[in-house]
Structure formats: structure tokens, C-alpha cells
Length: 114
Image (cartoon, rainbow, N blue to C red; front, side, top):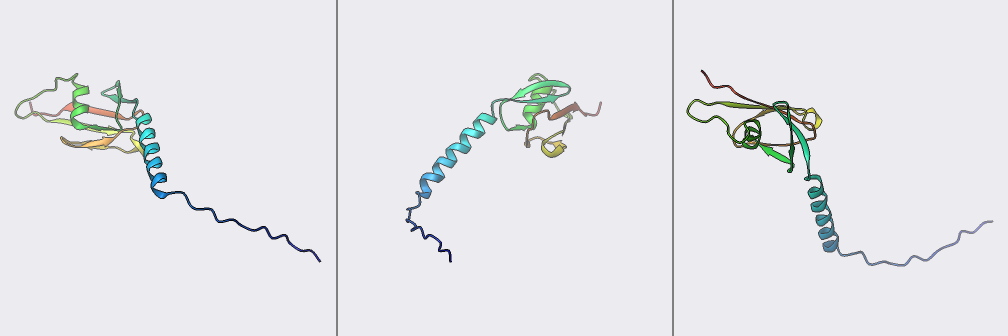
């Protein structure tokens, strides 16, 4: 007959949840900052480097027109994008932003009536 050994277990006090939460938050923030360093996007066929995880309609338009977009009554600038995360594609309008992904492509054009 074989007898199993019994090993006594010692209770260990769990670590503070607050300390763990703070450390995890700091790790997440550091990771996000590392990812925000540079993401290459393409605007109207020209490569640009973004330093944030999102880009707005206004920022894309500024990149497309080198900071000098057409203005005035009747000006309509359309922004479409493709090759986002999970092959996301769509249209941006004034006031919107979109998460960016390496290699994401934006097309910006003046669709104003002539």
C-alpha cells in the first residue's frame, strides 16, 4: 500500500489591489506612449508620419494641402480612408477623427461645384 505525502500549505496574504492597479495603469500609459512615437500614413499618395493614435478630418486636410486648404463659400472637401485596422475604410467629416494604423491611406479632394 502506498501513502501520499501531505505537504502543509502556508497562507500568503494577497498583494494590495490598489498597488497592482496603479502599476498596471502606469504600464498601459507607458506602452501607449511608446506606440505613439510614429505611424506612417499615406495622404493623397504622399507618406506622412503621425505622432498620435488618432487623426482628425482637419489634420488630414491640412496634410493634403500643406496647411493651406481651400476655403470660402461652397468649398466641399471630402476625405476617405482605407487600410485601417482590420481593413477598416470609410469617410471622415469635419469634427470627426479615426484611429490610425500603419500604412493607412487617406484620399482628400475638393468636391466643390465649379
